[in-house]
Image 1: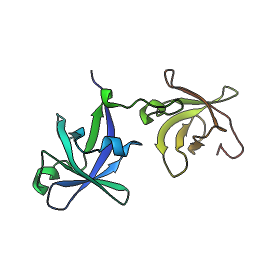
Image 2: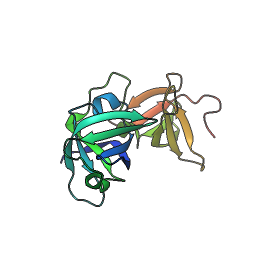
Image 3: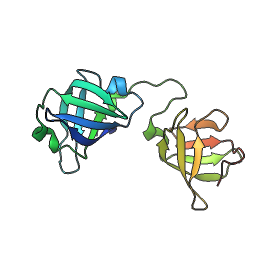
Length: 173
């Protein structure tokens, strides 16, 4: 069975010519949303995904505005509001060493160098210079925020879903 990966969330329509407003969920915006690129629209209200081809792309604030060859009016794209833009597994790009896809990190168990289970990565946020891995703690209620930097993240074993971190002062709540 083919796996699908989210690369954008359709937050709204824009204008009357079938443009959609997308919040990107990818580090590869330029490659993912390039002219002529094939993407798939999906929505929880619909069983099937719909293949579309990027006709036009522009950015507006933190959003990407897209039009597709297959749609030219507001009415045609209205039904995709709240849906997702996805790519199949075979469209994933090869990453450099030390780079990971979000789906490879989310769900990993995080351990201290002493072997103590700290918790599980539940989401990733990108506030600026480096990503921050939000860890649901094994003990306590307050999330642990792990900056993805060399001084803290010592090893990532994505196959076994295990991350080892160096606990620096102030890391644990």
